[in-house]
Length: 258
Length: 294
Image 1 (cartoon, rainbow over the protein chains, first blue to last red):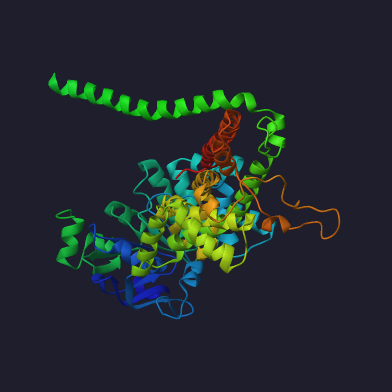
Image 2 (cartoon, each protein chain N blue to C red):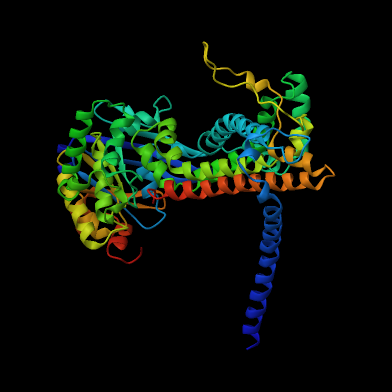
């Protein structure tokens, strides 16, 4: 019911993906709803990260990879995987946060400003304003405002990950991809990231890969369960966790295998 | 107990092996210093070679070495760094890049005299550059190009892939990623490679003799700066020249003992220059790496 009322931000249509001869994704079709958190869960090797990395064409960086099918991005109905679309243009619209915090070995300020510099923003004032805004949005400003020009690696792991989130937010992405963003963090840092995601979804659509089912249940509105490159079940998180439609999903979420 | 004895025995063997290498170098160096140090004074650096050993100096040799090194760096650094970046960041892996890779590694092992022969045919005669500083600089640039390329690639390869992905994920182009990340983070390793290559080049004798450096030069190349417009001059590039190792070679082939002392003194200066360059490489690496952690 809820599904029909929501606008769709992106939609995978019979998406298959190949690493050379190996087919990692098998005809996945599912929507990503606007200003909602969609979680991808499944056992290791099920293709959830591979699927996520299709959205910003990360696979284009490596030879021998091939997409088949479409990912349609709204509101302009663009097929992100079309040959005519430059992956750089895709990444201008879609941000990403990685598994391990990967700040650049530069200052806190320069980390956040990088996306703006890449886009050719020359005005110093505009850069400063956007950096501050992004750090506020990532709930990091109060902790780093005194040391904006110190190396980013002086921050704690949780702060580094929020810095990476601020870095992605600075360029106003329409869709934000999270690839197991808390797997390298302690429980307290994890909680702060989860809380942050909850705030962020008011303005940006979020797609998150997680190996932690409790996390998916806590942060997401929709959940997709994947197994061996296939989408087994997609639905509203509460319904999928309480009353899964498929036996396979039930076995996984009740911990009978994983 | 037997197993522990093996440990002691190997440690001893290792120390002896190490001592053979270190002591040999030390003996040579001290021997050279004892013979040469008395000759090292201001006059030695500011005098041209002479028929009288006590009047002779290394002015033309160290100026020649410096100018040749400038030309070498001017060509080897941009070519080598650009090749390394291309191979690591741009080129798609294929059998062509594999072939190029194998060739570059092999080129580093080609005897330097072969480069001399190539340069004699190509630079000196074919291009008509003559027996000049330019020819010598180009020859040594070819010689150290593989070293610079390999050092560049290794420095670039040590940058974690997540840093590249982080940059690309923000919409950066390849060039932006190279310009803002790859080059700054690999500069320590690249500089070290360049300096080690230069330290090798400065001691090279065979290829320089092959292209016809003179062994007795009592004049300096034309000055690069002039009083009248256009103020700069590149005439020095086409000037005949000599370099430090050739000056040494010339002196050691003389029968008088006094010239042997000159050779030792010049050798001391040359070794000092090489060690200074290596020291600079270590210091630069330390300085530049201080701010980079993953």
